[in-house]
Image (tube, rainbow, N blue to C red; front, side, top):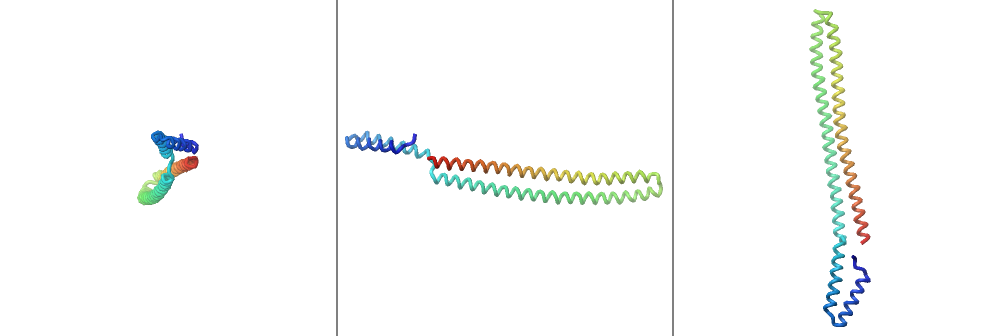
Length: 184
């Protein structure tokens, strides 16, 4: 229970009355009890400096979180850049390989065309399938890298949502602390 002004005045009146009656032991006992209650009340209240330190610590935490998210964004951008570059390299390699295969295939078709006209149609069909496969692989690779990009975007979005939730909870905590300090 907190010490009120009335209780403090009553206790001091008792102390002065005991001193007038030369009952110093009782006066000391009353004064000691009052001081102990004051000390207990003091422990219950947060000092302004402690609150200031807590606010500074919360702000420093936000600053560190901002730095971490900036680092995560940079890493994510670097990863996207690397993935794009790697995708281009793979497509270039695949294109070169298909060009080499196409060239060899044309040579074979030319040779077979001279000797077997009936086989010519089969090789043309095979060439169409091969081109379809080339397109299919290109589209499949595009879908694959799109999924990877979406996945990493989702991770970044989830991290941002968690950060927003933490910030909101810290702001609520700060409001509660400020309200408690105002009430006391």
